Length: 308
Image 1 (cartoon, rainbow, N blue to C red):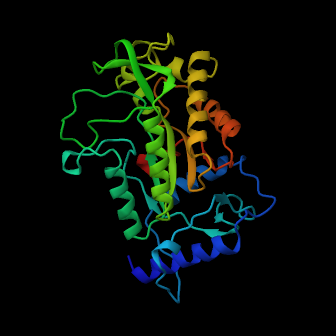
Image 2 (cartoon, one colour):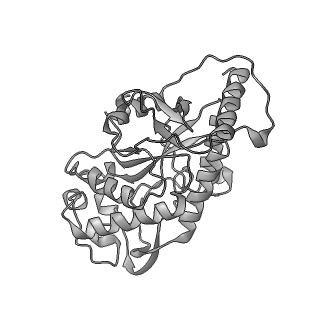
């Protein structure tokens, strides 16, 4: 990608940030179902923009992203940031931000994700869709694989063993190290001008024949007597155990990074199979309850991220 073009865009973002710190008045951020497919398709596509008069800025001034929003005059087909036009152009590579990284990276859980963000910055891209966890424990992977070890959001207290042979999770006790890593990674992306579409939950693994038996909420993997053993129960808005733990996790995420502006929320990845699509509404309600900045919300990867 042309370097002058990239720097010119960064200069525009910098000037927008300095000239208009507050959001444009009168913008509503919660009625946005028409936005979702468009935002996702734009974010995953390669793109460019016409600019002139590029300026080589000092590094500390280059990337100052604001809060993405829908242009209120565009019928949900254009976006703005700090009240000015904004074009999300990025890449989705199934990256997770809490994996430990392959051995050549020293097993550092931040290294793989940050190397990816560095590449986006070098290419002049400003948007990235990423999981914050897969919602389940995995076993049998090659120890040299990049995703062999993961940092989990819950403490593993036992008694008893989960599906991977390690102590069961206590869903009422969060592992603060996971959330510290999440915050640091969001800030790392922000400082490089990258807006993150954070996938709060994964629903692909809930499908029959996938990994439902390894889910955090599955009765066999926690000490909380959830009674959950099927994807239908996990995604049922009337299931109080599932709703309680979904809401608690969303609340903790909002307390951790809800004040960061470089975020778009995605409710749940690939709800299908025996899952209830109504779970998107359950998660969205929690987001709207706890989100201090009222970020954009995407109720699922529409129409299907593999088809975009």
